[in-house]
Length: 373
Image (cartoon, rainbow, N blue to C red):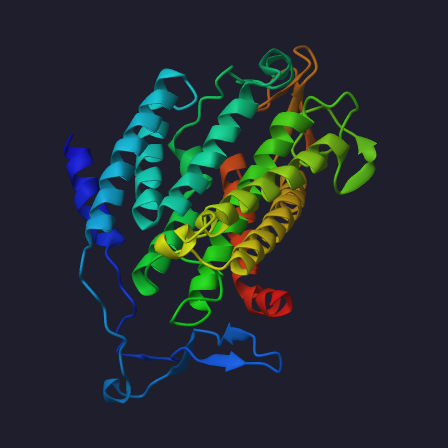
């Protein structure tokens, strides 16, 4: 209960609208809307552009400390929903005790920033838990420590969520309410953080779907850095057609979910005067949102999974027990190294691949959006 109250106070702060910040050393370039020859609008980049020599040369965007009824309601609903889901995961053994606490925190923060962010995160965890149970008996024979529920601890939960949740919180604090792409009043920053959020979970879903379904492939996987070499199922860096297809599907699914849940999106498809009454965006903007985020999801899922596989094949060690005939976590009398170096753990590899996917999405946001408008 103490954790619940502490989280509630922090989430209310995170969910309050804010639109800028003051920096004593950084000159912030204000947003500019530029119209091209087709009268289509896009936003100029919003980045710290120059180190100022004195604080008097800077101007600040105002920060609003107002907390609306919607913010409070969303935060309370988010806390209750996160608590219910984390408890359910703990009871079903898909989460350990530490994993349940971590899941409660990240889900609550995501839901506090927007329902769309929270539901996207929950969609990832829900599909991951379901896929973990698919072919669990076969997976138990192939991989050491596999359980039917796929119990995840705090390190696994944070590895597959923390960076994205930080992006969501930063966007909420610096930009304001969640909304469609190309519509923020402070420039490209909001769109960059949205694409980073989607790319992060697309990479997570791509890797998870590929791991959970690819290991069930009837054909042996091949090492991504040596495609002529077949390796045992479950080997870090092993890829198969089933796994690659699953990674693309997982990433696309995450992008599609985030696009469909854009505020005012589904309302635009309603008849009569309901769209205007519900504050809907235009149907064209809704379709563009879904298309762009689905594309980002596909690239993040497929590309991120390949990146994860390359890292797994090179700097993450894999051991195979000849007696048990399964992948094991550490070396032993009957276990031999079949690939990689003992440099990073699986969680650390996930952090690196997802962080790079999010960073690449943010850095290429301007080019992607200017191409799509």
